Length: 366
Image 1 (spheres, rainbow, N blue to C red):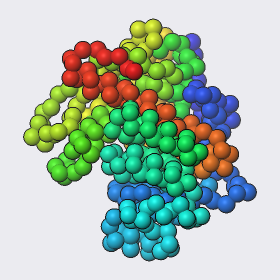
Image 2: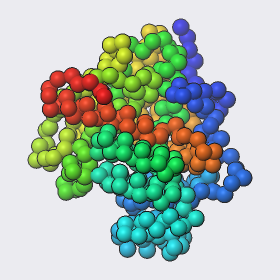
Image 3: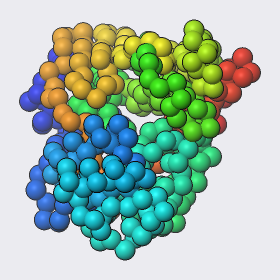
């Protein structure tokens, strides 16, 4: 079976992609001028991701812009104020955060805080009348995810999770190839994501109460997502094991985890996450060919391959297309393709992995 790889021209004209039959065109259409005003986004938390990814991306967006910030550091507030020309009335700290409800300049809150703060600031943002994007992982556990979803529904506000790769062309292509069985039924899927952590040993990411876990919560989410969106199915059970080669450094959280994830019908994928290995790949074998990504999940360029050759697809600013798409969802009052329920599904898998590590057995994903 000969199947040609997607070209840039195909990408621009293709009708749809697997998950929810989402049109590729919908991503790029978010760049088209709209009659509505650009929506204002306030970044809550000015750490590395906001500083080096989200704020620069918001200089490239067409449907939204950096309207405000929330930070507990006066020096950061002053720096951002001048760098991005943010008016004083759009600058908040964590004590004045709720006053954002009185600010018509801000339409969307983007929660970019340590994981243990995601639930509180998502709920408070929704209660202040703002739509919310919450960075991944969504929360410390599935129970918190459910609370966040319920609060946003009660406030009649949209909730989206920062799954930027659902808007990245190469990852979207593996959704199409896998879900539409372009090369036939998938017979093998292996994915891994991680990096060698050499940062501050006292950082919040290494504290279980603040991060919920280590490499799995931070990096493993991508591997879990890739398995789910390539197949277009939800896993039913998982068996996991872990290793620690630097136990003094990773005292509270996991370092490297390997798992076997079972899907309906008994099909099993393999995956892994790490704070001690540099991984970023997705390899898929099907009945009549193969395809995959590598590097797959980073902020920069993504490369993909198929049996017919390399994927020739556009490179995009992931966060820009992600935020532009959410602004479009707000305009149209429609659910994001990565709503809170998507984050909840991942956290159910994460919860089951940690249960499996404790029990040493295969655990159902419930």
